[in-house]
Image (cartoon, rainbow, N blue to C red; front, side):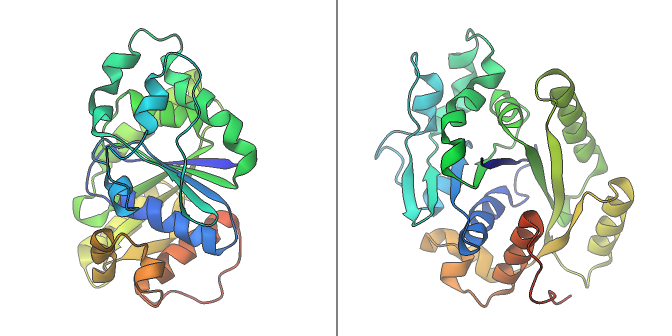
Length: 258
């Protein structure tokens, strides 16, 4: 039975796509079978995994199909599959507005695939719209990346309020997988303060792993590679492997450098 994790933040530019792709790759290295679904109309995950929009069916086609439809699954590498996005997702709410139980469409779609994977990762759009409600409805947990540069407790409150609402009314089993500090630089007082505040505000829910600033991570999309394929010795690879080990419960072999 797959564990479904929604990688979600209502703010853009916090590292959702980078996390979705490289966490998926790290889990795959740990011998876990992974399905990554791109729900963001910006299609950044889709682009990075080298799928040209328009080359085939996407998650948009499955979400808006009038009859039950299979997911368009493509292989990135053995044991690591993905479902591409479409720019049409930006207006998908208009297509779903009259559907019954529209908040649970994605949950119904992915249910048949749960026995085929160990992890299903959802790369969510930067808003609080219907796709994110669907993602939370379909997921076991939320992974929330937080860019230390744009850190905002007010922004976090919006996410936690929506999480509580969905948990109460739609998905009572939904949990917080963890809050992930991204683009972290331990030399900066602002980043250290963000880490302290997050641990104080959400005790026990902040990952020990921090995704440190790493130029190699910023280069991978243009190369259509994960950090592990681009430079397996990069600190970004080390950080995402630490994150994957935390999620799977596998003890890390080394301690990340500060």
